[in-house]
Every structure is written in structure tokens, then in C-alpha cells.
Image (cartoon, rainbow over all chains, first blue to last red; front, side):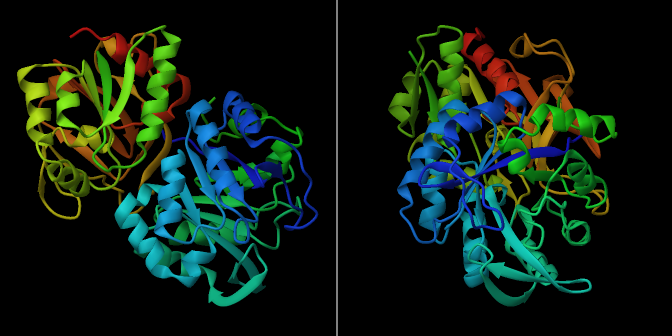
Length: 252
Length: 213
């Protein structure tokens, strides 16, 4: 049976790990390569690096981080943040990323998702969707790290991304990110039911039960979290043992 | 003598090469890991790895595009009978024919075809992405040191189907039983990614480095 995946996410800025509370108040907290190794040893199913300020800053530092991580960790690595062109994607893949997540550029340039999935394969193209609830059963896409509203309906957008060749959706609730109140389960469930590609739930995990809810209620194929792992509140193994005790299939 | 990862423009070769280096290091092997598309170097290699990401068609066309590569691979595998390890689409290419995007010829080393996984009326997500357990179908030297039902990392939407049942060395379950490892004399392939399957994957790569056909 296919296992549900637990993916720790490291927000990286200038080659250092940070975790934003609603994307502000960054706290410098470590070397991403060392963190990645720890997560790998704890049994993380995949790793995710988000280069959070990449839209405005030099990209080369993250390539070096990716390269060093790929030499040490033999589990899948997804890298996102500031990915705008086929060249950006190629550089990350060549550095050792297995998947690249596209956020703002997927909204501004739909051809990028189509062209990149044709060129590199759908398996390595993740579309990162930042969605904010605007009314009952309605969510809107935000870009630029959640700063810019687009007026685009999130549910229509994910369907479009699937049809263009996205291999996976990384779905972040902007309302929940950094709040520790749990995933937006309505949103996660709607998106999971709508598309036939895997959906990774993201944004808002404050405890292990939230991971369980993301899978059980939100129907996510994978759950992503940052701070509960990063600040040592829980290990990946503890998270897996908790999910296992709730009857969720996990790799232990 | 070197172990060569075939570079034909497909996907993440660095992962495969780095994992092989780590595997070689684990068993104190002095095997040199080379990444190349040069038929002359491939010919002289001791063993080769054929990775593959993207579509069956793109991968096959990628091989065809490099002058002399297909002939070199055929000679290496069928005439010299030296060990080859196909990974993901690299394994799928062993089949006679693939049906991804449009009908495309494969190497035909194994009598089979590559078809889309049955998603059972959309109740299963595709790609089949993540960790699944492999079930051994026979005692096989490249699995030594691994427990039956070990977890491996998968990402694929198409599966190899073969009538040569004796070639099937492992399967997994995703809605239906799916063939995930095939072996025939010097030919070995896995649908999963050993280079992304942490310790379990490294064990298979170590075994491949040690493999005497």
C-alpha cells in the first residue's frame, strides 16, 4: 500500500534556515544541509526547501545548498522559491533537486508549467498554490509569498494546473500558515477531491493531530510542516508513530 | 573498470551518480562512477546504469538522438552480456513497446509493453508517487540484505507489463499488482528509484556493484 508522506519544509534565506510567522519575523536557525540530514535520519519521506526571498535575491546560494544536500540525502528533494524560467528549473535539477515547485510564475506564465512538464517530466513539476479564503467555499490565489492577490479562483486554478501537466500540488492556506491552528481542511479536501494528482497539505500545523486531520479529513497524499519539526517539538518518527496509531499507513 | 551512468538528456543523473558513489564507499569498492553519453566509454565500462525520467517516448528519442548509443547499448547488453541496471523509465525502455503519448518502440530486451496504470475510475492518484512496499517474487541476488516488503520510492504513471513471468522479481500493490523489478540474465531494472530510497536503495546499488553475472 502506498504510504502517506511526511515532508518537513525548510525555509531558506541566504543559505540559512528560517521559519516565518505569516512570512514575516524571520528567525535564523541553522544550516539547511545539517537540518536535512537530521530529517533524513529521522525518517522523513521527502525534503522540501523553500527559498523564501529568492524572488529578489541571488539564486546561486540555494544551488549550492541543494548540491550539498543531494550528496548527503538519498530521499526526494523538492526546491521552490523564485522559480521563473525553464533555465531556473534546469539549474535546480542539475544541482540535485528531484522536483521543483513553481508558485508565482505558474500564475503569471501558464506556459511554464506546460513547457517544463513536457521537457523535464510531470514527476518533477510541483505547482505551489497559496490560497486565501475570501468567502464560504471560495478561495483566491495569492502570489509573491502571499503578498499579492490575483483574483484567480483557487479551485479552477488547480484543475488548470493539472491539465497543463503539473505532477503534484503543494497547497498552502495563507490564512493558516504560521498560525499553528491546523490546515484549512475544507480547502485541502476540495482540492484533493478535484484533482487526480497528489496534493500536499501545507500551512498551519501546530500539533501531530493536525497532520492526521490533513490526511484523514483533507484527503491529502502528503503533509508538509515546518516549525513543529524544526524547533524540536516533535521528531518525524514521533509524527509517524502518531499517524500509525491512528491507522494511517506510513513508512516506519 | 568503471560503472557508467548513461547521460542521454533525461532527468536527474546527479542523484543516481551520487547514490552510486555512496554505495561504492559503503562497500569499499574502488569502482569509478562516470556520467557520459560517449559510446566509446560506455563500451569499455564494466556495468551501466540507464536512468530515465519523463515520458517513455522522450527517453527513447533521447537515446536515438545520440549517434551510436542504441547500437552500443544493444551490443553491451545482448552480445557482451555485461550488467545493466535500468531505473524507472530506464527499466521501461527494456520493453518492446511503450504507449505513453504515442506508440513508441523500446529496446525489446524484455517481451513486454508499457501502459498507463489503471487508476480504477480515478480512485487512485497518478502519478503513483511516494513510498510503497515491494514484494519479492523470487530469491534474487540483488535483493540480498533486504527484507521482503521493504519500502522503496516511486514516481510513475505508466507500468511495465510482460508475459515473461520468469523475469518478474518484485511487485507492489497500487490498486492492482504492479511489476516493479525485472531481471533476465545480465539485465536488471526497477520501477522505483533506488537512488531516492534511502538505505534500502543503497543496498540494491551496493549489490549491483558487487554483482557477478
